[in-house]
Length: 530
Image 1 (cartoon, rainbow, N blue to C red):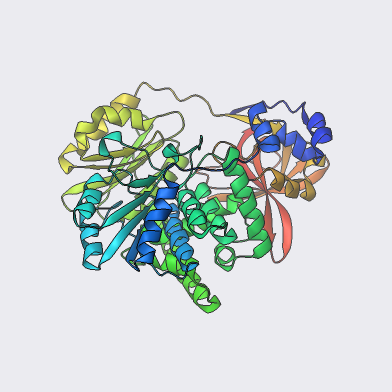
Image 2: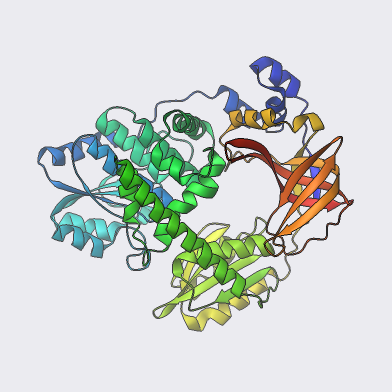
């Protein structure tokens, strides 16, 4: 591990020109000039979708005829909240619509002919897709042939060979010059349909920008900042009961979104449609009861994933690649398990389970390896293949497993992974004050395109250390300059730190809220023993 200390020489100028706390100015000065200007000077513009007027007219025509309308969603956080935004939005017009969150295993992803047939049987005259539909040409054509209209709202990559002649709201067909989520597109439609901005629906859409890892730039930043302020001011019950403390971008990404995702991952145990009821309900008792079910499902999800991980104590990593096939794994948990192995072992992980006559796998990579570029060369080995540089989902015939393993290992065998390097902000003792960390909220949200800062605590002395959960985690008390601090080291395979060691610590800073008290939270990302 090595690190580079970022230049923060602009801190004084930013502090004086923008009247920011000095520590905030110091952190902000470590970002690029473009990012600094984006935060300090960006002005929102009106968002215009090419077919918005047509979309509103289409829906109003069906509403005026009292036709049945169904919202076709998706089983992840973005799709579930996009569905909730639509359902709740129509409720504000006193118009009840149907909705459906597909079963991950039985239905698969997106609008299909089979689902259209089910909607036709229930006499729906308009299907509105959210977070899916942009490439569902066959299903859309089938609907049209049976006198059912379709409105597509989506944000996924457009396949120009699979376009249908229906009204489509998509960021590619708008004045947006940055990526947004399906929930954001759904919100923009509802805002136009009901002719005002609803703060609660705005908050749900902001959660989807974070959960779907959209770039936190330009309008996305201001959209989320407003939502976070509204969440704080209006105390939305549904959002607060899912959180474990103060709601910021980190809480949304690490706690709230995984809980929402959990029901979609385990649809054979829990019904993900429950989440739409939860987010659309106005009754406190019902909301709290739904919240208990969501919490229970998330705990089951965590336990099952942990059990899978703990059971595997004998596996082989070759050329930075790990491949595991296990028929007992739950399909909805493959991605979580792959992510854990990839993060823990710093490798490409390929975790698969059988589904009828073929295998399904989730693949997670490390930043140094673009796994999509590698596997796209061998598309003939898979029945399905999709994703991006760091995460993929594939299906394949069992007889191709050995060849898949062979070609990936061969592609990676000569690849040299460079030593991990960090860009950090050097901390002084005066920086590690609670008020400074609270003030960092000014720079929210952190995430894709604007990563949370990493800090350097240099030459810290280990005073005490304690292993937790069978030495998976460690709590250290360190001496830094003239004060002592508690720091946490999570998810380590082995720890070579000893009491009295001198360390350079790469850390993230946050807040820990417990029993009404707020404390400084220092999480170790990496360390160097001097």
